[in-house]
Length: 309
Image 1 (tube, rainbow, N blue to C red):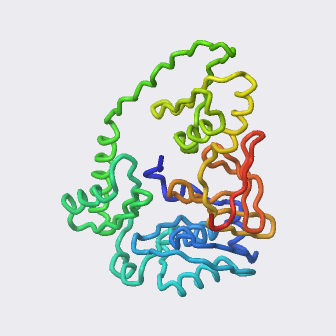
Image 2: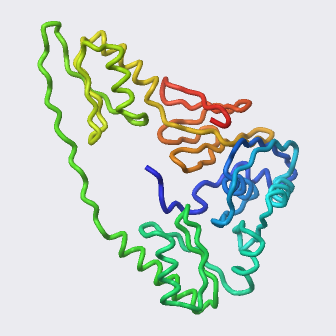
Image 3: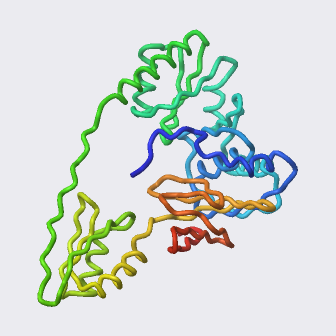
């Protein structure tokens, strides 16, 4: 499931950021990476929180070597036609027109919304406190408020109360169906079941039916369980086959290296993540970053993702 309402500074690359503020140079390689994600990783490497306006669009592919973060930041924004402004400790990326119209000498506050859509929260602010202008980062469900300080206090309080009340609604959990054990057949068949965590369960079901058409298989979408009626020996082989195919769909969009650190920009279910060696994503640990590749490990299992895939 796609994560919503994540805080803008949820992924800070502290180790690299402290180095980037100094004189150390970095190398970057991105292939068809969303421009907003590239700007976010560059800003975070500079030690800032980052807000990317929805007007920033497009994908970029480039290789930059031996540049400081500041040089890379200036080069990427100038060549793509966007700008940035530092508000407190937050870099705001947007078109030059948006930056001029939305930010000035008045106060600015950042409010993260966890339970309601940022656009809905913005509409509420416009209705209750019309003197406050708002700027929405829909991806992170973040609302930026801009206006007189006295009005900002009211707007922020209204937003937080609105969000808390929306978060109080309980969502009933779905009960998982009970599996009925199958009786052993003449070949001493047994019932087995394994959860499909990442892949398309129906796709794996079709593959197993092709491998052993004489056996019974079923996939239960409600519980995510794949069940089989096989011999113990067949099941041991099938477990290996399932493990090789039950992998998360990850797309490697970029790699950034400094002298002794590496960061990978990885996309999962439409959401991008900045990962250092040792970081986890959906239960898998980034264990190696090579030339255009990233390796993920979970226990004794591992797989490699290539840049642009």
